[in-house]
Image (cartoon, rainbow, N blue to C red; front, side, top):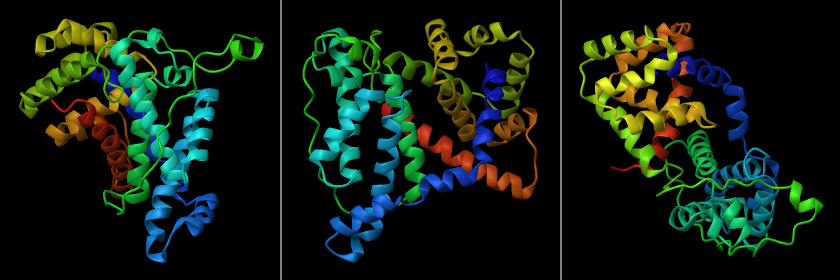
Length: 310
């Protein structure tokens, strides 16, 4: 598994080598500048308004993309904007709606959710992507600091039951009706357990022993690497969960969580693994890459720690 995980590092580093794109996301959109001039009561409030507004504006734009929530997301964003003042309050409205939708789905299942918008927002994998992206963007825009003030917002109340099917509605939107048990923050109870077992296995080993484990796993055929984890304290059900996590839409996020465990517990082993993956080295390149990689991993790990506190 680890060789497969570190194979994904190439994609992570491709993102890390594009600081201009991240900086562009952190730039304040003209629409946010305009709305902040309208919203603030004193100019001392401008920095906080600009930071929050930029995060809200970028995240709402992501929410309506076709591979996220598509037409349903656009409908909810429109309602949240109409009922709230400013991009950040609208984003809180949308984010909270997603959180509640996933919570409801975990309690009763998607099939019993009668509000069509809440049902369409209830996919935990998409919530995880949204949460990870928001954490990363927040760090890019505001660092680890708190920009002050409490933002009030009006909650999204729903959009009613499913309309009668017609040619338009049959081809639009997204539907994800697979069962989810105890989903929190986009991580199911089983996923939290699986990641926890891997982290425990990493923390329980000295650096030299862990290097030997990684070397052994790299020497196995790829389809045998995950199964081999049972020799190191990871249960068979958790191996099955990890297999799904590392082969689905969230493979990059899953890889970053696992790499984050290794970096936190054994930074030297992590550095060696990065080098073994064929990454270039050098003081300037290393500093630039590590800074952005830390940013990306930090956001994903923050989301994981929040969803799986145990």
